[in-house]
Image (cartoon, rainbow, N blue to C red; front, side, top):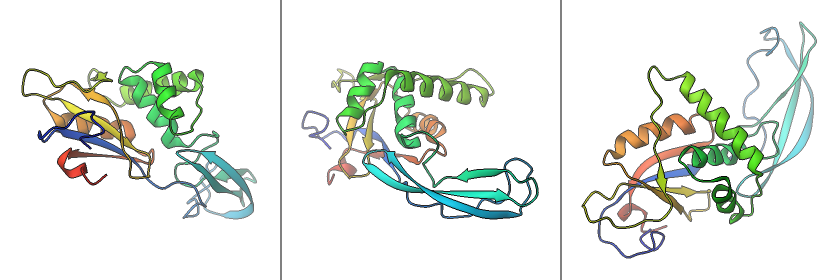
Length: 212
């Protein structure tokens, strides 16, 4: 991890690691009820394949159901997969990076390094939607942290919180550093942003990531 920070350091720097959980495949469970009338009487109504773009191209299978009461049909997606051609994890990561203050160009470049093409329009739409969603669930003003793209050792002993992303291949890359001395508070904030997205946020340290 020290190499990823661009320097050799003996400091035990707090690292907030965003790790992609497995996604794709087929839905693991049947839906409990119809989304239109809440009836539990559902009939399987065929399957369709979907190629979802994430950290790699992931073949997924979309299950369709027909409600036995109201007659509506609907799609049931695997975890991390929705109607978009990009996985929820990729779109959420782009939104988080935008909320942290990275430009559309910077976010697109980070994803392109992993072979993922995402338009600036998608990043703007996902970022705004996530921001409004989180703000609506807050009792008070929404706290917003900013990130520095370059890891620079400051003169003071407070190094901040390094934010890194593991796309699921065990090779984390660094997004930048949040200048905060309260790593647990930053982690709690990030867990709010990644909730139900197929991304987990864990507070680690450079020493615990040396094996990556």
